[in-house]
Structure formats: C-alpha cells, structure tokens
Length: 136
Image 1 (tube, rainbow, N blue to C red):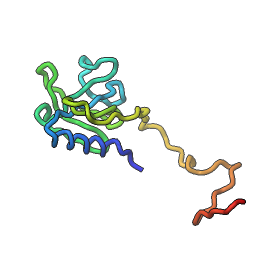
Image 2 (cartoon, rainbow, N blue to C red; image 1 turned 90 degrees about the vertical axis):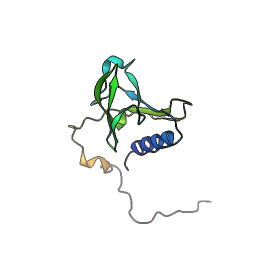
Image 3 (cartoon, rainbow, N blue to C red; image 1 turned 30 degrees about the vertical axis):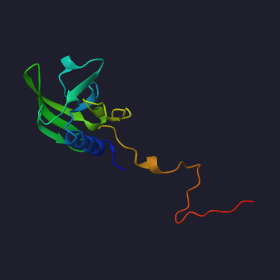
Image 4 (cartoon, rainbow, N blue to C red; image 1 turned 45 degrees about the vertical axis):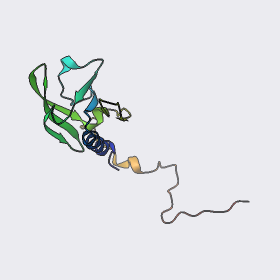
C-alpha cells in the first residue's frame, strides 16, 4: 500500500485553512533531498509556514511538498520529500498531527525480488481460503 502520509498532509492542510488558521509543517531538514534554507534550521529541524498568504506555487503530491517562500526577505524555492515532514499543525491552536520518523530510502538500492518469498526451510503457505478448526 502507498503511504498515508501525503494524503493526511493534504487533508490536514485543507482542514486548517478552511478553519481560518495558519498551517505549519515541521520538517527534518537533514533528510536526503530536502531543500530548505539551512541557516534557519534548528537542531536539524525547521518549521515552515505554508499558508496561502505566505507561499507561492504550493504543490503537494505523493512525493513532496514544494513551494516558493521568503526567508529574511530573500526568495527561496523549497522542496520537502513527504517522508521528511514530521508533522503538520495549526499555529493558532496546535491542532494537527505528528508523524513517525521514516528512515531515508536510497533510491539507488536494488530491491531483492525474493524478499516476498518464504525462506527455503519454511513450508509454503497454502493458497485459497483460510480454514479454522475447533480445538477442544
């Protein structure tokens, strides 16, 4: 199954904006491929205001959150992989969601096709309908 994180981020963003609050995301600034102004990160994390009035060209898809924003009056293009988003919340009341940390995935890493197969010493699982047996 696909990760639920990008769907939750988009839904919570919409819910926060619909309630006239200011959406902020907490980002792991050290996650691979994150593009944020490092001078504004603190302890490897950065909080970003992603309200419609604060950013331009906000795009949220299943891979990343990207937009243009200003830091100290200087424009920056930001790119945040969805796995680097640690939480999204409303600034006014703190309501939102915090996500579990996701390990960085190396895209060059080859996937082992046999990972889904049982080990050789394990008997194969029967296919078809499962059956239950009453034990007395």
